[in-house]
Length: 317
Image (cartoon, rainbow, N blue to C red; front, side, top):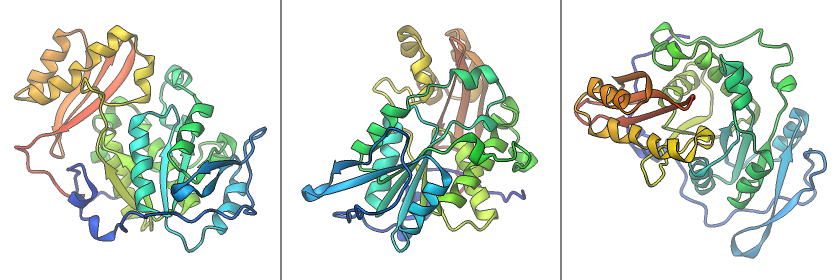
């Protein structure tokens, strides 16, 4: 994939030139027709969710691609927002769904742990899986559609085909996690083609991922607009992450120092030294794209974060 000289900066959509394209928040949404067809998870009934103004809305859980395609045909003519996730949802994901809800008539959320973006099978096996809680959460946030595809359907011929980022993107995550960016780009392209949403929402915590997904969507002329959303943090400053659940309480407290080091050090090298002095195993602390980005290990759990660097003039998406 050819890469143009573009970067990422800012935290809100209007800072990326998107505000004129986003429709104003909907004061209410139309209920889905109770007769709409769909495929639901085995043993799981379609459930009524209280909507605004007291109407009852249906949430649909599709666990086959055929079921989703049937559902999708019934949504033509409505604006669709999409939040792709790997599950183990937290307040950061909630913020994505809430913004999606405000800017679209239909909210679709996918839950799929993508094996292709893991270079370590142990890391894949350890990744938290909380499907029932995840579906309950997005229900409570007003999502209309939940897509829970199987690996065999998304990769019917195995991993024969995958996208490759430009060689200049094979730094940071591309260097320390071989195959990660390829896996992300491949699954996101598949999901965007399946969902055919007007907008897709991605958090800025995974900043390099956001960059390559945005570039990919442009390079392949995808009609879906990629919307960057600010990182959501705990009170301590720790970036919300599904991997935080793997930390002990003591390590979780300690992990908050990552954000502190990134925001207070005068340079990346000083941030790295401060983190190593606190016992973090540091993969990288670098300044690129108007950001200071870091990846560290704590108790064997890999954590990433990034913050804007004001003195570096950021590039636009």
